[in-house]
Length: 395
Image (tube, rainbow, N blue to C red; front, side):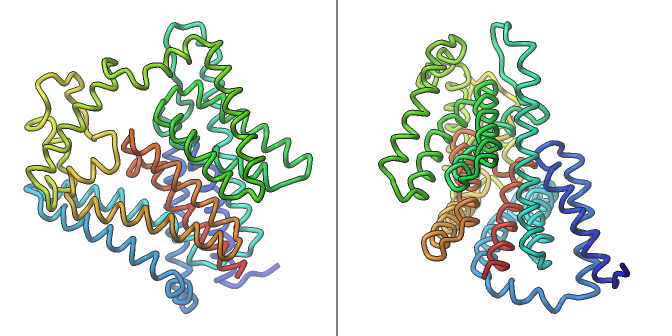
């Protein structure tokens, strides 16, 4: 079959996005290669044909206005810093580049089946990443202390599970075919095993909040669904009770004498001191690590090379002041409103799946700075692009 130039470019772009979808949760380097190819493919496509991109941009202009407000707030903070260049470099990478992950799938109008394939490949990549945690963990379970991240850094893997375990739960409720349910149940068991081996308590809390929340939002039989979720959590609680390592790890959640808990409190205190001294624009985007390590670190702090505040909102307050934090919180609130309104108004499942990704990231982000982490940030923006692309096709 002979392809025109546009068809040929779009065919290559399709394969690039497929590669990005599955490798994004598996390898930062390979994911970046496929994202770069996707962006080059998009640029080529827009050179050949660009008159069809205005409609989706107009339709979702409010989303892009919210993103623009966040970008402007962070950029102003970066320009206000004593040293401007580091903030601008980080802004280009963690905002412009990361957000660009949503553009190829959103701006080029793919068929519904192809968009669904992108989503399935992303889920498959997360599943394989979870499997890698288990493979890494099994030979070392006899050790006194263990936490595992598989092919990803430990906190990144924890965020991925917090973002996608709620999706697995909803997919299990939505699909009734035996084969589909078996596959989804397998993914749930693997994800639960992986997050237990991962040992990130903040992700445990996020899952405990988000899974019941989205199940109750989705379910028409809320009492039955709540009872099912409660039984599952009771069963998981039983696993904690019979596994000393897990029960001891869980018990440290409220132990302010534990080193990691105490250290987080010290980091948050230091970050809030930055905000108190620089309330409008913060210490300057890209300047947190320097300010913390040279001026604001508490004398009793032991982790003296920390480069972030282990909390998305507190990080924004310290680095970008009230303007940056307000823009960040506004984005979180508006994205939540947008996805929930879309679900209740249009009964479109894609909106609720994006709400899972957003909520898993943000609730884990109350104890970890994961909004700018390369993989989790791209997953958030790419998921938004998938949601918007699917909604365009369905509409």
